[in-house]
Length: 398
Image 1 (tube, rainbow, N blue to C red):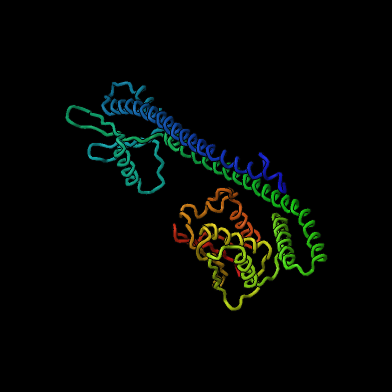
Image 2 (tube, one colour):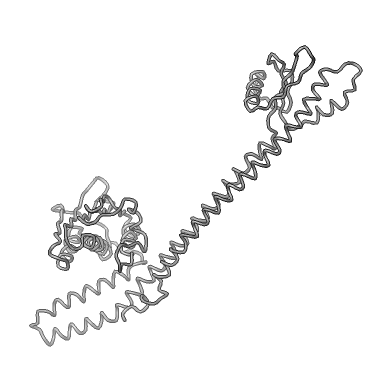
């Protein structure tokens, strides 16, 4: 068997797929647990705030009673306890106003504006809207004072604390998820590189033998017309092994004729696909040279073309075109196949995603890696409609 490690039960590929399948339910339960914790935290905080708010209400009722005793006291009344209660309030902001709404006194309110009356009136109205008002009846003639109060500084901080806490926890969780995904991506990349290089290594020995046998056959049967075709296929295998060996290495870019490259790929595809597939190339008469890794970029185009032919089930039209803008060159590969659902425009590039019964789902993932990381470009689904076709676009900077 040529690739025994590929068919083993615990291959790098199967390990990656198993890891991806296992991480999805874990992420779901983590998110669900985070939501439950957040709701529980807010509920407990709300309960504590409600209890403290009720306690502060009781304290203000006592304070208001002390204020009433102060207002109604005569010369013989002992005000020691009354003043002690009034002066004991160091945290709850209080405004006392008469029945006309004029401010009589205030406590625990810091004023930075010179127009203190206006500021006090604004706070008074705010306290009143919150329902924090206690009326003091001074006598039987209908005279009264209103005691307006707000939450203490401690209560205000306690109300804000759970939201600050949840924000910090959320930031921490996001950082942890980002680190997990980065680690996962690094592990995947390491496996892909190892898989590619091992494939190239495994191909090396049989390719060398095939090249030797081909030369021997060429010497013994120089007139045989099949031997050149065999030699061409062996060279093709050598090029495929060379592609695999380049994955994970620093790309060697060179000036390449994009038109010749595309014509070479389409010619290769045309000779190896059904006559029912019509291949059309819309290329300018002249194209400038671009900095490309020819072997790997050809691989990308071949992969897109083979996927397009599979999507058309061997019957349809494949169009390869090149467009130019002021900043980019666009290479479009369009087919008349079954199309891609819009929600899967990004998913098709994920490792392991495939609609084929025997597919590995690595082609488009490696194609994006080659275009993005090696050529500083982009590859994406430009347009797709179910049962009408798909257009993949490669964007290269000039």
